[in-house]
Length: 479
Image (cartoon, rainbow, N blue to C red):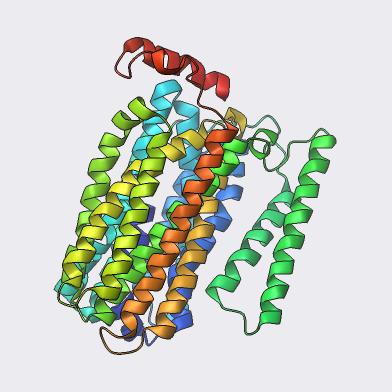
């Protein structure tokens, strides 16, 4: 949980500091996109290799190395004198964060079982979500208190004490390294194809192609690498060798569709948080502290709803995620209507209300969905299964952040109240599209994998101990 809080807080706290960092460094629009989305790019690239290495050689040493590199790269980014230094440091920091988080999921899968595993994964998801929601308020306090020129640097240094504490706890408490994969040989070619495909997919959204022809070339490259990866994985299975993506993952519709749900939810929420903070400061001229106050209800609601989500799961099962997604759509629509129709004076209050609803939606959907997805990851592929899930989320974050930020930076340069609301409306539309897509995918997921509670309406009540035992016995069979 400390590792999840450290790495996600680092990304979220930077959102509030983007305007001041942009002016302090003299960074252009492309530089800002690389600083923000480059972290997700490197994070996503490191997840699957990190998960594979942890499965093959044990997780503790990679966890410790990742946290140490993350700490050093964060200090370098905070003290950087130009956009190039900050971009390079953020790329290294993102790769280190990916290496760490892939070990986190694998360790939870190794150590906990049954209901305890679900609770551990839930706490991990809740911790990361609350850290991401707390980032903008904390960043706003730092920028407002220390000034625009130095405040953003302390935002980047905020994760340093957390990283030091995480290193201390990991050295004492993580179990000794042990191999969980049956085959000690790493699928190097599959790893290269997966990284190449991820890179080819994400870069065009960070650096927009100059023409339609260039965009088509990038798309063709993604398709070719994806096909090559699929063929290579099948050939390894036929040859009796373990592929990078375990067959149980590739053939599991609940795992794949649940991952798609997580992509839509995670990408839309990260993009919404970033563009909202930039819009409030650049578009409406609000201070960083007031912007932080508007973002604070999201963190509070996320924490409260996450704590209550598991009670709702015990009552209605997987439909809890549907409830969260529906609430998120309502929040996004409310933000779009407010940005278009409300006067500038009322916008801060209305957007704070939509942030409250958005945080509650995240608490109801993120943790239950992640737990359901990882139930379908076998023990020998726990690290890779968690890595693929998080990599998909990071791809979605890079795509959504880059696309929506590009729209805002290129179209929202007018006076306050002019093009700013149009950019906010475009953002809300993207969020709505992502959440509606997630709701559709979740509906298909339920159709593909019916709920295992077969007795129907006459099954025991959620509070019944017999129901808890039934759930315990069922989860290992599913895995």
